[in-house]
Image 1 (cartoon, rainbow, N blue to C red):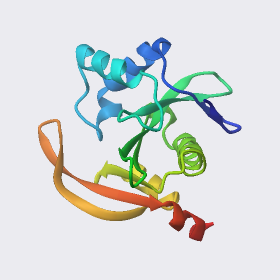
Image 2: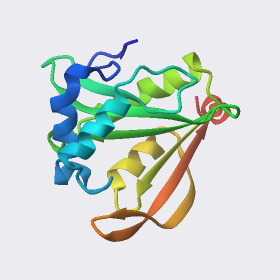
Image 3: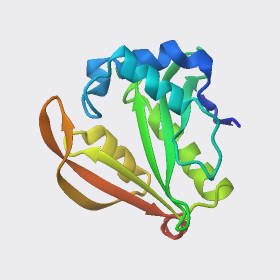
Image 4: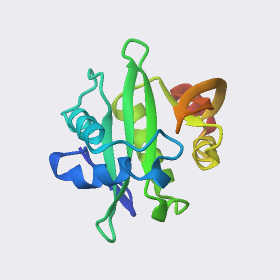
Length: 179
């Protein structure tokens, strides 16, 4: 499986992506809105889980590294996890190296993943969660027609601090209305 546009390509995480995966998950500035940076052992376990083969019946994350086509560098990833197979609801999440944030890369990746989720996987709804302090993420979600559905008080612990998160949703039927 490969998803691409003129700037980026998305392909499933594989065993050769270990160094890249470790770099992201152990970097404090990158992880500031996600969780505490992981230790080597925590990252290794996460990598083993996320690099397994995935299909629509899986309960794990489909993790797709984002590669800039022009330079061939992996700059982040976007991921999808089916939360409710019967209702066809999946969570999406994304993370980028700080050096490429604000350049439209996450936007391109989210567009590709939305199309794949709704057209190929035939999902009904995508949801996403982000810290209320992560304006870049929630603005990106809103740009892509996600609707803020909730604010969850003290729902995530980052650096020994409880933070609120926003919950966003995008139904396939709403997307058709937005087109």
